[in-house]
Length: 534
Image (cartoon, rainbow, N blue to C red):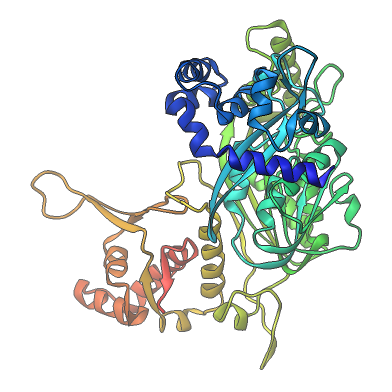
C-alpha cells in the first residue's frame, strides 16, 4: 500500500466534501432511505436532475461511482480526484479504467459518521462492492462494509480508556478504528488476507496508526497474549455445512450450529487481562428441550471451570428457523422465489431439523475475567482483586442472562455508556449487604419518568410505571410502596429513612416492608435506574 497515494486520496475526498451529511444532501432523505432498501433508482434520478443544473460536481461523481456502483466518465473522475488522479486510483485498486470507456468501481468507498461518549467524527470506509453494484450474489470472500451489526457492536463498546484491545475478526476494520479511540494499542485479526488489506487501508486513510493487523483464525495468532478489551463481530451465522451452500468468510465460521459463538465464550478469558472485558455479538439455538439463553449460561459455566469469569448476556431478537434462513439467504444476494432460494431454504431447514432447533436468538455477550473486591466496587470501577483488612474479599459474581426484545431507549452516543453505568452500579450494590445498603442515599437517574393510569373518575391509579428514556428503555411496574420510595429518592434521605417513613404512613411493619423492597431496589440499581447519591 502506497502511503503517498493514500494521502492524496484523503486530500481529494476531504476537498470534495465527501461526508455523510453532504452525500445525503445530494439526493435527499427519500432516496437515501431507498438506498438502504437496495433501490438506487431514486438517487440516480435526483443526481441526473442536479447534474442538468450544476454539471458534474466532484462529490456527485465520487458518490455515483463508489456508493451507487455506477460507471462515470473518466474526465469527471479525474476532475473529482485531481491529486490522486486516475492512475493513482487504479494503483490503489479503487477503479478499473478501460481505454475510451467509463471508469468502473472495484471497491465501495463511502463516508461513515459516528458519535460516542468522547465526541463525534467521521471516517471513510472501503469494502468490497455490494450486491447492488455487482448485479449478482456476493462472492464467498466478500469483505463487508459497515452494516447494522457493525454499528450495533460499536455502539455497545464500554467507553473506558484502556491500554490494549483486540478486534477479533476485523473485516473492514471498523471495530479496530473505534477501539483506537479508547485504547493505546489495538491488534486486529482476520482469516482473510483481503480483509486485512482493506482494514489496513482504512486505518491509513483515516490517519490511525495504533493498529497492528494479523492473519489467522480466531485466537490462533494471539498465543499467550492478553488484552484489556476484546471486541468481536464473529462469523456467527448458523449455516448448513453441506456442499452447495455458500460459505461467506465475513459471516460463516465453518462450525456446526452455534459452536462458533460457544468457542468465543470458552476462549475469551484466556486472552483477557485481570478485569478485562470481552464484548461480542452472537446467535444461539433454541432446541426442543433447551432454552437458548440457558445454553449460553451453560457455556459460561463451562468457562468458569477454568477461570473466574462473569457474564452479562442480553438477547435482543428471536427468529423461527424459516425467518432465520430467509434473512441470511437474502443477505448473500439470492432472491426469493428463485430455484436457488428454495434449494438453500430447504438446506437450512433440514440442518435445523437435524438438531431439533426451534428458533435462534441474537444478542450481546459481555464477559469479564477475574473477580471484583468490595474495596474496588465501593470506590472506582475495579479491575483487580484488592487485599482488604480481612484478606481478598470478592463480591458475588455478575451472572446475568436476560431478554430485551423491545426497542431500546434513546442513546445518542450508543448503548455502551449505559452498559458501563449498569456494571458499575451493580458492582456497587453487590458489595453492600442489606445493613450497609439501607444506610446509603440514592437518587433517580435523569432519564426516568413515571407514568400513572387511572380509570375515569377514580382517585387512585390502576397502574404505575417507571419508564427509562435511555438504555434499554425498560418499563418497571410499581407497587404503592416502591412508587413512594422511588419518588423520594432525591439524594437527601437514606434508604432506611425513606422506608421507615413509608411504613409509618401506610401503617405496615417496617422490617417486613424493608424485606419486600430491598430486592426491588437492588434490581433498579442494577439497571441504572437508581444510582448512588454523590
